[in-house]
Length: 107
Image 1 (tube, rainbow, N blue to C red):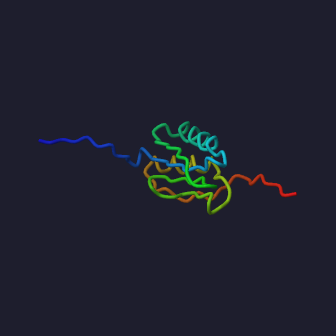
Image 2 (spheres, rainbow, N blue to C red):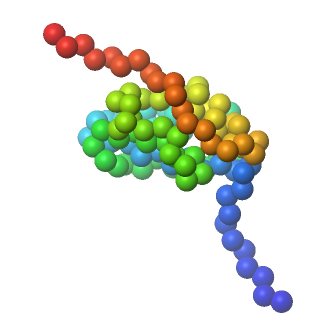
């Protein structure tokens, strides 16, 4: 009998890919969000990856749930953590609607 071991992410082990803009210095935001996710969901596999200009894209189990390229704001971290918790319980990933305030003052 031929047995193979495969590394499969189950519903209880959500995979979160965060693409961040390195030029925008969003690496710290990515690490902060990853740490918050892991605090509440130790089984989560979080990957921070440098990506496109202006990006902060959150993908849970291959589903885009938040795009800074579309919203021009960073996601609400608490809502991201909540959605990851739901996914670890077997729910489907859902869109993140909450945003952090935009701290941009034009004078």
